[in-house]
Image 1 (cartoon, helix red, strand yellow):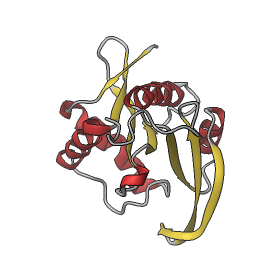
Image 2: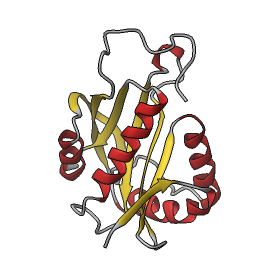
Image 3: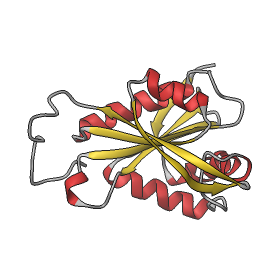
Image 4: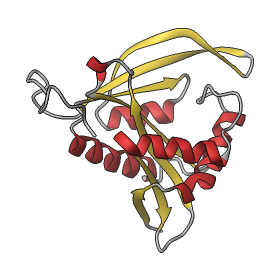
Length: 181
């Protein structure tokens, strides 16, 4: 079964909300307490797509959406405008199928085209599958916040990772006055 990776639209919001809702309700990897509604997910897709990217993996031939990856601002402060925070979510049971890698690689290509230079990710621990994917795709661990989030009756650590997206990070960005996007 092949996958098609494409930009998300508002019509994908229900599928993305369903996929993400599983993680909110049943795991500690999302620190949200309540799953977002379809309308809220559509708002997030539009917001991310405006300056970054939100991609979905769809079963070939127009089948179901089985995962999504997106980027958002790392921080609203202007000095961080060349950095983006990334996330990827797959429907339950899709681990180790190549879908996460395919989504992330397409997302990274899109972000590089937009001029982003550095990617950041945060992983609620433990999460060996996500850590393995991020490291395999070139992220390096830069630190861990200890006992920073409370989810499902336990304090959770969050590991932070980063990845250089473009060569020449010692150089000035392509346009020091205009942010990517």
